[in-house]
Image (cartoon, rainbow, N blue to C red; front, side):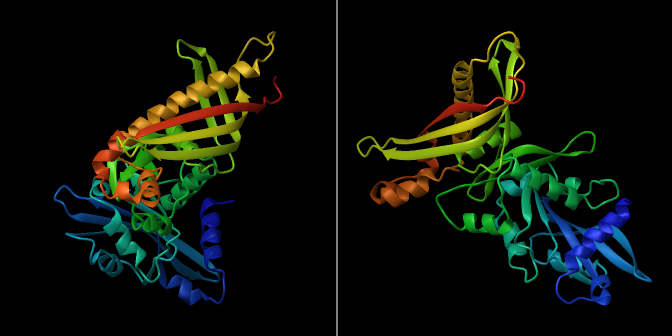
Length: 369
């Protein structure tokens, strides 16, 4: 099927709910993606990916995809500038993607979300991501003549289903920003040298500010397991013998059980967060001598040790970023309010002991073994 025809059918399907007519559809400019950046002069740059639908008569439509920009000292008034540069009534209800450049994200994302969240026709179910470098560089990328925002949305949703990215929306993040005591992570995207958009991992936030520190895609999937945010499946690989890449294994999680306990020594003030996860996995790939029987007990121990080591590296990065994604402060405030009131969490969190442990059980080895 012609790609342009397929795109038209997708867009028309969005509006085929309730009562509508052709005039309402073609009189609109649909914004399907927005980027926010901090300029070198400290101003705010907004770019919107607009889809203009024009009737050619006889039930035929023509689609124009354009990038419209506006720049101001603050967020206030940017949407009005976009409206004045767009044909017809601007419709933000189909904006599925909000991108924020890393430099602006370091200053905080609350004001950026506020300007979008409070709009009467804004889509609070839209996805949000932080980009490496300028967000408008990502939004302006061409993808086979189709709107790039649709492609990025599908990429993010696919990564959510395989537990590479957290499932977040503007509504969820807005709620988390307004709920003190627990930080969050966001998808981190980058534009590669070959002008491709890639998921680089997750960005670690402290409050609403991007810490400047990220986790790789491989690290983010393990972090999501530690956070008990497992979706349908996930895929991981591990080098079992660091001195030889011949002993590597790839596997997918099928079931997970997670326990987290936070203890406070009221005498010393020491805080310890213990996280134990037990996961049942299926082996997808394990090159070995086929004349030897598969020693699952040995593999269980090796995978458990390898993932536990990686989990400790991840928690050390969280402390470095001052990103309390486990909500340790929130738990202390609820269970030990007398201790919490005496704390300076920005300083005390860095001294918190986070002790993760991963236990692996192979329940399926596939058709090879």
